[in-house]
Length: 325
Image (cartoon, rainbow, N blue to C red; front, side, top):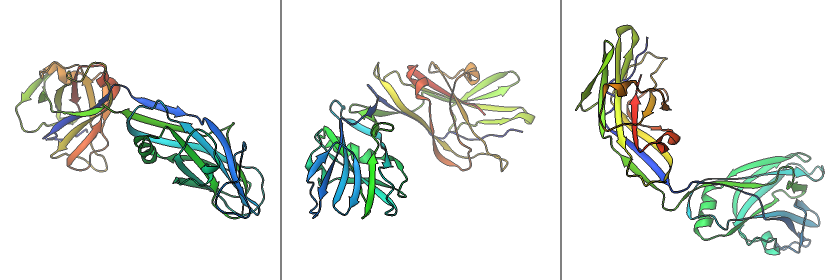
């Protein structure tokens, strides 16, 4: 027995975000190295080195430095950003748990003594036993967005010892080099909200569907043993989205008035897409070749949103969603 929602759609909107280009960017460091200060310690570096040591011992405190070149990154909204890397032991001197602190700052593309003490933003820490190692994958979305918005062309990363004493670790730069991976929605991107041109119900009677339009809600229901089959037809006009735009997100917003279920089983809606014509027709109810979304189990009434397949929407100038049980 299959049961699905009744009185499903009281309000329906399709929200579509689009951009001229979508950027997924991976950067490798333009420089790697280290800076350190010697005892007596005053918080300022005394020398640079090519090695990427991280340590705090009796006569030296060392930090690994690497920097990325952001030149050429278009202005826009950072959607995601992750800083990845790996710290491995240079020796197994047992000084207890080793802690490596990771800070991000505005850089200049070179290793400078000032990189040791320049104020930065702490984006994370990793720890491991002496002789152990750590990898990191840190979410720096907000930090990167703010640095780019402030005009930064280079960003630096400093990895420093968080314990004292702390034996020598080293930032891995060959086997598992650090990377900056981020996605960007360029300036000029926007979101549009579309109401349906058509919102109708298709009800199966015998072997054909009958279209019912003009109601305040749409019933979507499938009960096999009772031969009940009602489907929702929604069509949206997206022809005014500029030619050549790349649709980066789309979701269908619905309001659920009521639903039926047989716990522990709950209904779930598959969403199908097709090229519409602005008119609800019986044949639309059978256009189920391309599924563009599937809801989670429906367990409550109210507003909910369904993410749609943007690849499908990019292929059509008009979008229609066929809700079937």
